[in-house]
Image (cartoon, rainbow, N blue to C red; front, side, top):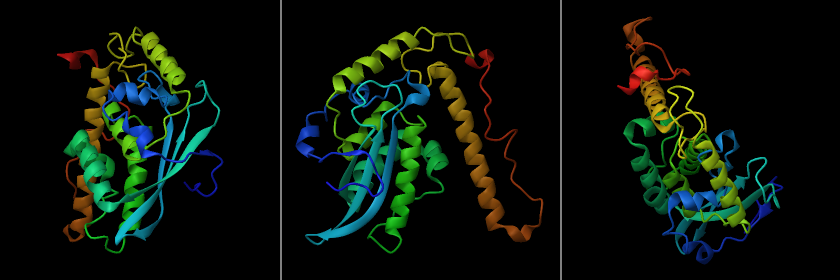
Length: 260
């Protein structure tokens, strides 16, 4: 495997056979090996996905995806600060086995909110395909890094790109699992209920996080629709707009009454 330019990360030769045994593993257990924990909060690993170019093989175009995974600060087993690898993929595989899974898992509204500015590549490998793939993969990496996806999507992404499982995966998983257990009893900052082991930030329970995520997604969709309306109808006059609802994409959290 080739090293991404400018990277000081350890480069690992990708071996599909080495990762095939994990395909039937539970997603949450699988991602723990890389340091993804529901209690990790801002200490989530940092994923990078970049298209380095493309090459032809047996009449097919392979897009060369440069992948890297940065371990969170403080995680044990820091033999390398990051692991980098190169993973060639065909456009049909990227569309069917990755794009389709992500879109279905997020749902229409959340997908539009996160990928509206980065549409997926068109069929047929037409001009502009590489640029579209770069933008879409960057948006996907941002979703994973920001915790906008569940463990099943993170696992699907890592498996699709054949991420090498760390040699000290057992120790990493044990530490991440222990951190999640300790955080489970922490009271939610909004409703005071235990945050649980499936909290994404270790400070809020799953239900309050879901309520806020729904509100933020709705605000983003309203904002996108209003901007599209303004762009498509400039002749209707200045000041004309679609009602975007009260507030925008802010940091408001639900109140305890939202439980009812």
